[in-house]
Image 1 (cartoon, rainbow, N blue to C red):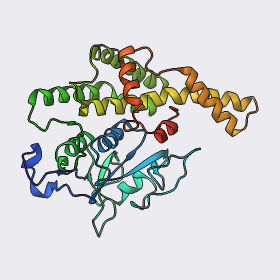
Image 2: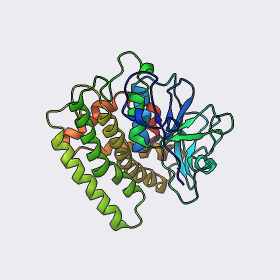
Image 3: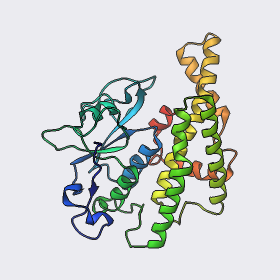
Length: 315
């Protein structure tokens, strides 16, 4: 039996999930729920970024892992501070968990061997169960934050999903997300977790093919659907960041290891690593339209904070 993913239903107005049985729905409520995810994961970054763009930080808490271990993504003692050198291997004081897998092991409906996906939404106010997972489907979480939580959006927040019933825009967003979810985003994980070099090479080829197609799609477009930031933009940029981080990490390791072999101390090797990243140039230099799109959003700390930039070797 896997963890049940529920849906948020606003107290007023229509909502696509309104036909869900009451026992499978939640009411948006400030201070009641928490986002849990990993800073370097493209799926998690969709939710983390949506929360920022919509101005939901005051009403929806977040626990963000900054590093990984054999037991999953590792939570630090603050979502605001990335580890300067390596994982702290601390724990999250709100979740009372060291890793996201530890959080899953607490769930009564989770069985060993079942997936442990992130991001998730947890109930922060269950007096009997700290860290109860109530949602774990990425695009549903983003949709619910964009629509069901609209009463709590900051003034001027983008409509990640149209609130005015514009079916054409909604269909375009859905079509782009379907393409992204099938042709690009999954291959980040397949490169990271490839069992063989052949598997890794195949996944990298699929990424290149997708970037070629994306580059064509973005010609004469500033954003993915129309003139407004949409969920499709959140999802695309959330995918480009980890791809950029893979590129940066490879360059960093070359510079770092070369400096160590030449007798540099740890601090000097880190400087050499970041210098190598700078010399490597943009990870999307071969795809000019993708690079233009990426560079435009990467300058905005709402999309990529300085702490994230440093932790992902993008500084």
